[in-house]
Figure (cartoon, rainbow, N blue to C red):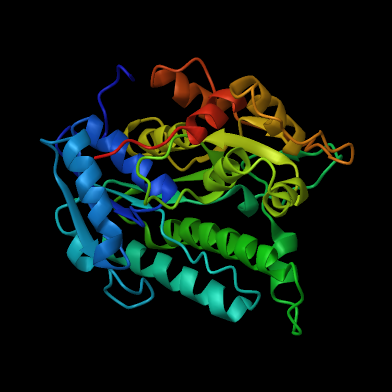
Length: 346
């Protein structure tokens, strides 16, 4: 644990939008374990029910309150949840994966704008962490050596996403990447122009896997790896992962800790923290699964698999993990092992 005095004192409340998601729920779990309170937004009351159940068991003395925000694009959507908070993690986004940029991107930008406006109007808010994405820097590019650092932006996806219709298959990935790129840029522009009373940081996760907190948790990309483990002979599931482009993996707990650093560390100000642990592909997942479950007959390696050769500046992110008691990134094998375990029953 960091020995420095945290920016937000223990007992302070942090707002997490999209708290029921894979990353949002782990941020909440880490904050509650450290003695912080959490206001979490969900789109419907039932999405928060399993979280109340899990966190009342995991952190019985902690403050965890759910606020229903059906549409983040509604003006004032976050005002009630913002009352009394000292920090914000804006994790919620549009995950519809529509091919139409007009469906996704304005909604994402409106939601970000409303939560930033609300935070700026509350003098109690001192830190704001935006959950960006690796795709705000680049979409995966295989077998090409190139560098990624804080100055890297995915301009190519913005251009591709906004090409006129027809919206072809595959456009949904460009639209998602553009939504994250445009939103993160908008957040930095807001801070630069409005000079609010809070410090902004961003966390850029790549392919996230690791422990699942509850069977009802939407495990995102982690769920895809769990599917590969649970269905070794289902060719549809195996082919989906086989076709997924090579990129970097990262553990969901490591990503949560980077958000904690963005909230609590005094010297982390105006930073982009890259959540890229190690390059992986379908074959490296199979290698991990063979170690975890050697008794299972796993599919053969795919000789056509490529590698992500990008060189990512993760020094600052790794420094933050060390401050929170880790030697570095969680390994692929450990993340895969965690995601294959059945979640606790509460």
